[in-house]
Amino acid sequence: MKKAILHISGDVQQSGFRAKIVDIAKALDIKGYVANLPDKRVKIIAEGDETDLERFIKAVNIKNTLINVTDLEKEYFTPTEEYERFYKLVDDGETDERLDTAADLLKELIHVSKNGFYDLGSKIDGLGDKIDGLGGKIDGLGDDLGGKIDDLGVDLGSKIDDLGGKIDGLGDDLGGKIDSLGDDLGGKIDGLGDNLGGKIDGLGDDLGGKIDGLGVDLGSKIDQNRIEITSEIRYSRDDFKSHFDERIIMIEHDIAQIKAKIML
Image 1 (tube, rainbow, N blue to C red):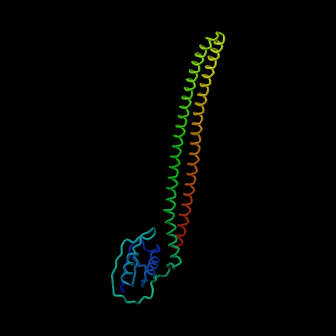
Image 2 (image 1 turned 60 degrees about the horizontal axis):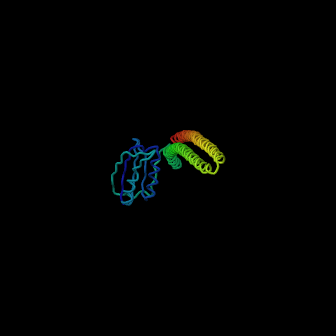
Image 3 (image 1 turned 180 degrees about the vertical axis):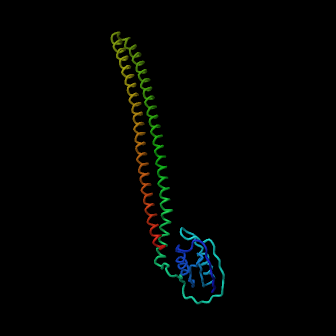
């Protein structure tokens, strides 16, 4: 057995510190008491197994949202074994254990408000950045698709023109061979070849123009849809974040009221 007397400085009064000390002492089977001092420090008398007592001394060095231990003075003595349990010494007008429990819950709520909603806001911002990136990829996809359709139209038109030239050549060659069999039949076939080549050329030009128009129209529609989707997502994100900001303000207001009541 070993006895220690501790004097704790920092934000340790009216912060739920003594209630925490009682819980730690009970968990380590430490006997004694904890009390507030007029100079804003807290005094702890603790008796117990030497190993458990050292663990207890380390555990009372608490730093969290409400409690901040800045200095710990300790002295060791021979144990008197006069304490049957560990308790909080309460002066007139101080809170009981139920309000200490309420202070612990308040501390946890403050921690969630400061950290949980902040993390959520960061995740929402990250999601917005990813959505913006997706919009950029859609822009690139629209430009690339429009370019490929333009290239396809030019290439197809060129191939049709080439085909028309070959058909023209075939008509001339066929006309020559038919001329050898009959001038009249050759002349008609020559006329047919010229007319067919012109129609095929016209078809190639018309088809190329339609494909070019389709590429431009499709690219424009993709750009417009991307702008509308991005605007709607950003509006939803801003509205969602604004809603959470309002909720945080309400929670902080409620916490201030609870804390004011507890400090009465």
